[in-house]
Image 1: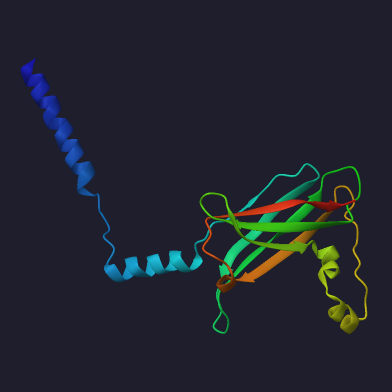
Image 2: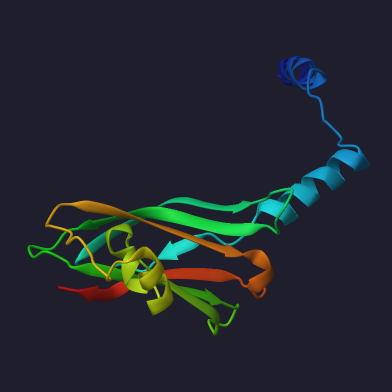
Length: 170
């Protein structure tokens, strides 16, 4: 019996050594690790969290920090909103809340859906464009889009971004 156990242990160690002999551990050099850390620092940020709404389905399709040679980096968030209610929605005002770890709102921004963007024009812009604020209603089941961009230099250090869509006009 002892010989059988000894042979089994010998075979097990032999199989294990063949298995582990091909294992390789890749060690990153310091330049590669620094480049990856810089990449995370430049492009990584807390992603936008959509606060649910029973009248709208909001989907964030893009949430990135864009870099350019000529401008400071910008946070760009875009997406789609779908009317899931049984009534038309005239327009939606979306609110972004940038929060710290404790949930305190550090900064806020708002915008209208694309079919109602002219509602945010000031009187001077209305005069230049020679138009009055207008909107195209979002019918039940219909989808519209939104787009938001802000320079990262205007934002405080934040740990959470929430997107509220509860400011609806029907």
